[in-house]
Image (cartoon, rainbow, N blue to C red; front, side):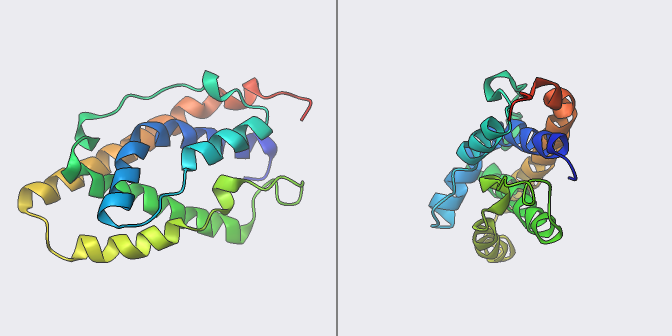
Amino acid sequence: MSGRSDLARFLAAHAIGLAPLFPAFRGFVEERLGLECPDYPAMLRADLAALGIDVAALPVVDVPAEITGDDAAAGVAYVVCGSRLGLTMIRQRGYWGEAEGFRSAYMTDGRGHEAWKALVPTLRGGTFTPAQAEAARAAALAAFAVFTGAFAASVDVSAGQRTDG
C-alpha cells in the first residue's frame, strides 16, 4: 500500500467485508473468548472519513447463511483474527500514511493478536461436535468469500475520494 488510493481501497474493502461478519465475530470474542472486542467498524469509518471516503456510499455485501448461528461464529472469528495477524505484517513493513501524517486506527490496533491467542486453544481444544466443526469450517470459507467479494467491490473506491484532504 504505497499510496493514498491503495490504503483507501484496502480499508474500504475491510469495511465492506467486515460489516456482515462483525456481529458474529463480536459475539464470539466477547461471549466465548471472554475478551473485549475492539469496534473495528467504527475504526474503519473514522479512517475512511479522514481519507475522504463517503462510507455510506460503500457497497453492501450479503450475509451468507453459513455465517449465521452460534456454531458458525468460530469460523468467522478464525478469519477475522487471521486478518488482524496479516495487518501486523503490513504494519511491520509500513504502509502509506505513516510518513504522511495519517495513522490508521484500524491498521494500528494490535488487540487482534490477543483474540488470536485465545482462539487457537479454543479451536484445538476438541470441544466441537462434528456438526459444530463443519459449521465453523463452512463459515470460515464463507467469510473468506465475503472478503474476496469485498475487495472486488472496492475497486472504484478511490474515485469517491475528496481531493482536499
